[in-house]
Structures are given as C-alpha cells and as structure tokens.
Image 1 (cartoon, rainbow, N blue to C red):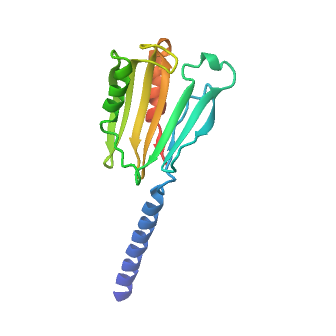
Image 2 (image 1 turned 60 degrees about the vertical axis):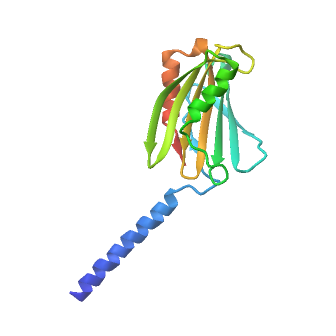
Image 3 (image 1 turned 180 degrees about the vertical axis):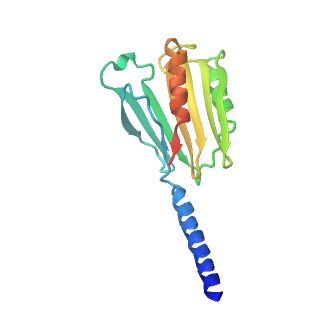
Length: 185
C-alpha cells in the first residue's frame, strides 16, 4: 500500500513538473516576442528592418516584390512590436486614437471596427479607417487597415494602406483573413 501511494505521488509530481516546464516554455521571452502574419501568397514579400532609437521597439517594413508588383492592391505592410516592459500599451482605445489622428488631416475619415476579441485577458482588434490619405495622396484616396494585438510581453501593430479603388470585397476579405490568422510567438 505504501509503495503504491509513493508511485502515485511521484507520478503526480512528474506530471506537474512537466506541465510547469511546458507553460514556462510556452510564453515568449521579453524582447523576443514576434507576430507572424500569413501574407497572401500571390506576391513575394521582402522585409527590411526599420531602425529605431530604442531596443524596446522593433519595426519591419514588408514590400511586395516580383512580377506585376504595380498591380498589387497592397504595396507595403508595416509590423511594429513594442516591448510592454518599457511601454505598457493596450489595444483598447487604439482604434479611436488612430482615427482621431487621421481625422485631423481628413475630417471625413470614418472608423469601422471589423473584429475584436479578448483571449486570456489580452485584446486583439482589427479595424479600418476609410477615406483617409496615403503619404502622397489626397483625402479619400486610401483605406488604412490595422490589426493591433496584445501579446504576453509585447504590443503588436500591423498596418497597411489599400487605395480606395482596390478596396473591393474580395481584397478586404483576403486581408481580414490574413490579419486575423496572425499568431504571436
């Protein structure tokens, strides 16, 4: 009886230890967390790091490359990861803040929240700001599509601009799906 009880306790401790090791390895390390976005496969994407003054913020610019790049509805995607140890940012309120910023330059800009979910106390929001402008365009020429997500140790932003004439239901659904399939590692 004593031997059986000892084996049972040892088995429980082994399972508990394995569970702790798994949970410890499941969390990304601070400063190493990334977001992986499954870009639409019709085009090749080249990445280029955007230099920052601080190591607490990492940005990458993805540009479409290869054949027929001028026909691509999305030319660039910017992914920014902000370490929450240094900058404790939240996803809640982010769409409204960005909308207010865009409205300052284009008063007719509108905000549409496409998806919002909360998992394990962390929020992820996909939103579009319509009737805004690109860097060289005029008001109403661009739709800004943004996905913000809180990770265990970082805050992630994925931004892309789609010219209004290319913002068709099929293009928008393609990018909604890609952004919502993003995963934090």
